[in-house]
Amino acid sequence: MSESPVLYLVVCAAPPAQRIGELADLLAADGWRVCLITTPTAASWLDVDALAAQTGHPVRVDWRRPGDPEPHPPADAAAVVPATFNTLNKWAAGASDTLALGILNELLGTGLPVHVFPQVKAALATHPAYAPNLRLLREAGVTVHDGDVLRAPDEMTPSRWAAVVDALRAARRPTAGPVGR
Image (cartoon, rainbow, N blue to C red):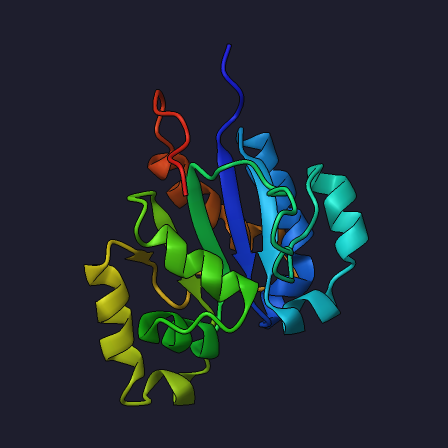
């Protein structure tokens, strides 16, 4: 019997981040081992100790020191939920000024399924760099979902997460093991 596949869940600072524990529970119920990686601002909004207890893995925010062991098992897939304007544009530019961006940049070269669920204000989505950067990420193999997916009619309902769970279920490789990073 093989272990459940590992999902790196990268969390950026947008309102849905405050309820990311709901998504982690749904993903775990769907068969994923969830490893959370957050941007520094998102981490300041979350109870990282509670999320670590919930997932069984430390929530990563900062780089590990040289020689320190890798705290997460290798990923089978990754999702950026919610993905912000800042993170998406920096990622497309290859910036690695946070652990979250560093991991996302590394994942582009692995061939793993990477899904992005943007939460970007309408005014920012019209910025001239945004659409070309999403196109660049798509060309690199990232699946970028519709920006309205996380906008549930009632912002406090867990139903907002259904599209995320469904997309990641479809991305799961039934027989493949983790790809090294």
